[in-house]
Image (tube, rainbow, N blue to C red; front, side, top):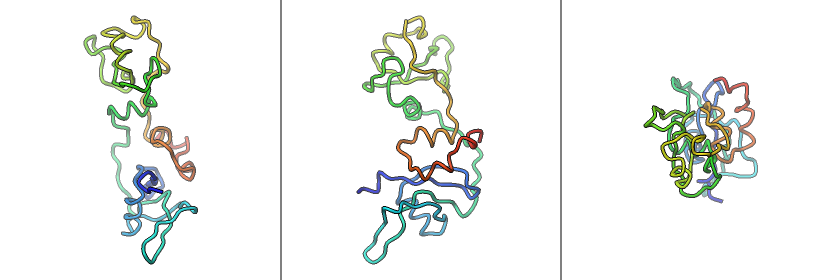
Length: 173
């Protein structure tokens, strides 16, 4: 098994989720005693020539890290993740691009609520119009995900051991 495909949830000292990192990065934080192991995968181990270590699933930093901006960055890849890497008009996952619901030429801004993933064909069909003017229906309305929601729902496959730390009570964070 390649450990590069596995990841660990990183918690701040107060147990709030900060990010997701690679297993080698999580192991390094543990080894340097910058983090402590909260949950591990019992069925896997990290091995050296003469030692074995628990396979981290959830780690907690030993020192609190101030996170002044705890939002999700508006990026092309994050829009694609939010939209499941599929066109929000026809559902294809080929030739994807971004579409402004209200075109920029008509005052549309680059905001979470105005950007959707679209294939080149649907984007060209929509042109410089709104989806309604082009007779296109959105699969779902775009929204701005919060930080915990983004880690929980859009970071790919997550470990079940993360769920207690990604509960909906923290969604207002």
